[in-house]
Image 1 (cartoon, rainbow, N blue to C red):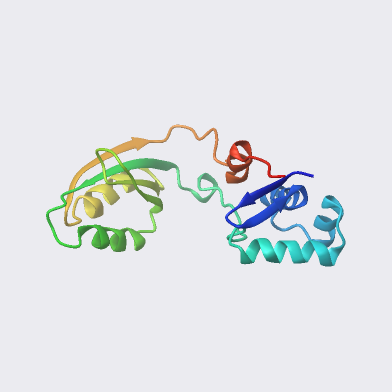
Image 2 (tube, helix red, strand yellow; image 1 turned 90 degrees about the vertical axis):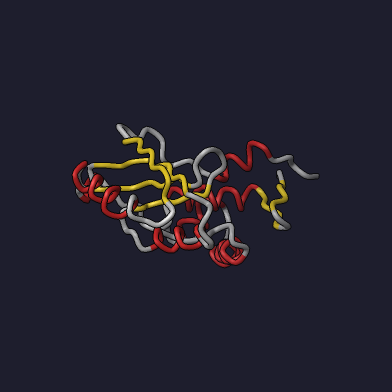
Length: 170
């Protein structure tokens, strides 16, 4: 049995099987999960609770399809700020937190300060967001938009990256 040490939590092959299964079906019953990974229901539930408590399992969510909800436009937006104003970073983060069009926001390295994933019903609605909100935000120096034509991968598991680079411990 392989054991991996991640942030002071030892994950064995059963923990990994639990995580892989829950990533594919977060609604699976504990009974079905226990059967699938070869544990009793109580032992399986104990492991799941430990994975939740450790923060490895962050949340259980439903994945909604933006296109089926009428959001036809996705844009990856680079935002560059003027760093001359006091508190510009915190102020921008607070503004972005209130914009429902922004699905994801990242602080990045490089020539821009932020990357935003913005969703809108139409190109007109996206333009209204950029012109009416983003450009009017204090400190915004430059906005570069990239309209997403097709998403062909969007379900990357962090577990697989960690396992690929992990060294089994003896």
